[in-house]
Length: 275
Ligand code: ADP
Ligand code: MG
Image (cartoon, rainbow, N blue to C red; front, side, top):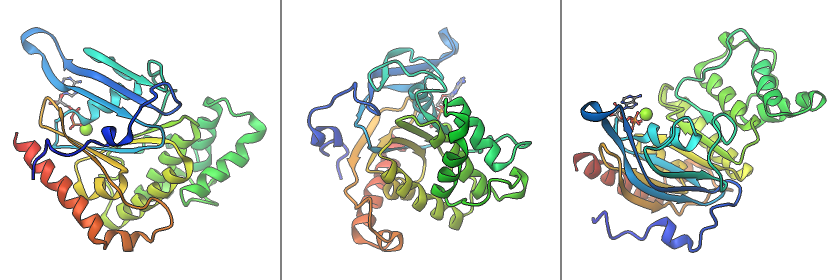
């Protein structure tokens, strides 16, 4: 299998409008940490356009620059060279995107509902509106009726659901997720993958999800970009043409189409890590 002969999802999608809400334009971006002889080139150069509503999964070996790219899209860092634009503007840290990390990073002294309320307040949702929005969001992530529970009373999987609800509360057109399910057991992880797949399809938001799992990438993504080992460059850009709604997740996981995408991504990850 050749890594260079694939038609990229970008080419297949045709014209790209970088200033539409939820669009991401990553243009010739490289990133270094440190200075001079001590510097490490973590990423690039990479150019990726993400269309509104796409679910892009970034896959690659540990240390290839996945989190770096996500932090650049979030605006937590500025690229050493090249430009990143979200909805046609420079990303604003903390407000262009809802972000979910590997650890839920919730406020442990607040209730489940209290954590969501704070995000709604920060997003500028009026006080009288917050109760209704909080219940909607908790329902959406499968946590209806848990608003009064304390963070330490709920499982790691439930905490990560709260973190996703909190990211959705930000009401941005973009959701960024950095290996959010990596610390969970296999069954919980599959459930959360299924729910996130549905939530993203319903919400119409653009999502960028980082993982090193080819299975997770092929299941979640509408598009998968495989990065080479450091400095990360695009090794494969693949449209994942699987149904996003109205499909039983077990049927999907058992389908030959999913198996083929998983195998193609898995192969590309191996080749890219060795390059
Ligand atoms: P990944 O998420 O794919 O595992 P990262 O983006 O975290 O990779 O890191 C890419 C490379 O940059 C790694 O070699 C890492 O050691 C290095 N790196 C990441 N963050 C820093 C930092 N703050 N200072 C110095 N080097 C860093
Ligand atoms: Mg990382």
